[in-house]
Image (cartoon, rainbow, N blue to C red; front, side, top):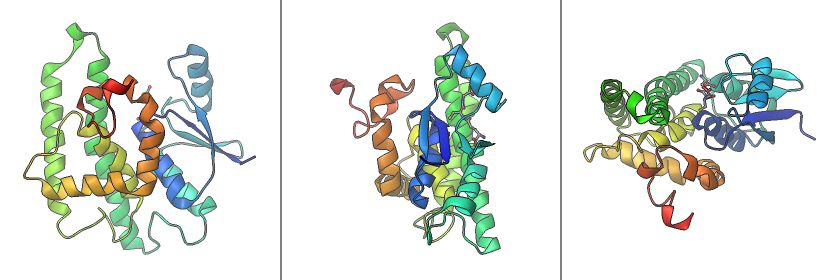
Length: 229
Ligand SMILES: N[C@@H](CCC(=O)N[C@@H](CS)C(=O)NCC(=O)O)C(=O)O
């Protein structure tokens, strides 16, 4: 029995970020599916971690929250030899942390705002807020597309924690704001991410749940085919 438990949900983008990292680092963890819609489960989870945000890693009884911290913790204490998602060189590590932050704050956050808006009753949706969120996401795409000039991965020559953040953030964000035709570097990076084995496996495991994703109409047929459910 493993000492690591991950409280997660298969549709959650932040959970995907950590699932991709576990796979990259070659770490086994017991996965516990969390249903925050169930009042008893929610209050038990809040007792473990009062923000109520998932994923949450439990390492020998100790809660480790926040995806970027979870990934640093996993690398420091549990990674298989030779596997790393944050380079050992301090300046290179700073670039990885920077791009991890940029994806969390400027892609994942607006993407979550679109989903939250869709979950509201129709009369309570916020058209102005959605327009602003769309603008923010479009300017994040432009920033990333520029930065990707001459790069395979976003922050280093190798696949890093920043790419773990980028994959689920972009996977869901493009269902609301597609990549513009002139953003070819971003489009190629998106395809590279989706074909990367740890990302492809994570998406594959989530596939049976996509029918519950509020933005499913924007999912490409290669990920979700409404005819087959
Ligand atoms: N900064 C947090 C964000 C985690 C987060 O937003 N998780 C979402 C799921 S993708 C969540 O728990 N939502 C449930 C809620 O807000 O009630 C992290 O990096 O772990």
